[in-house]
Image 1 (cartoon, rainbow, N blue to C red):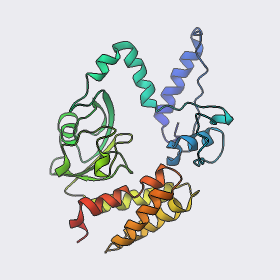
Image 2: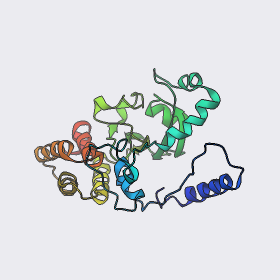
Image 3: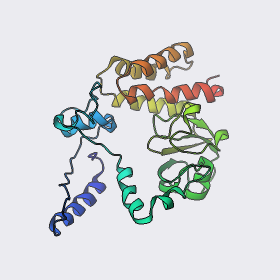
Length: 275
């Protein structure tokens, strides 16, 4: 658990105390809550294992994969926490109920963590395949007063940036890739006409520069170089394109491979901001 999540840690520790004091459940394995140091890179599966083992969180070269050689050299199964959450719901309500919840041809429910210029930000349990416009209007109370919907990041820092005109794309795991984006953890950020995609991209690239573990040169040097390039009044588009290609092709893990997404989206969808 990231150490910044103090409230979550308190709740989880309380629930674990209840479980330990209750009569034992046959077949229930011991649950260990391990506090991490808060590195973004530890969202990568092998970096997380390195951190749990007490080492610096850095991605491993693969193969071998963690399912073969994982935690303390043992085959390891890693789950997204939301996956484990839905196991209980599926057992209680059935898979048929779950798959009936989607929209626009998609199946299931998703936890969308919505932030930005909306009236009611927060975690929204909404149908898979919902559009950003539906999410804003039906689950977030609309835009803040005096703000007009301008752009959105569908998948957090590395999920890319799309203009408000592309507000009818179903939000799900395989619907955004054709547009150079992805949903990832569904951390949706809504921008208004008081924001710019350029500023958002600059903010994201500084974040990647800070959170790069430094293990591989394409990510370590690439994020720093990209951050410097996009701070310039006039962007060197050819150099940024070359840098993006190298980072995608040669970075060890998904951080470096996806870090160029916000910049690439600005060039593709917001050229008027670069004029």
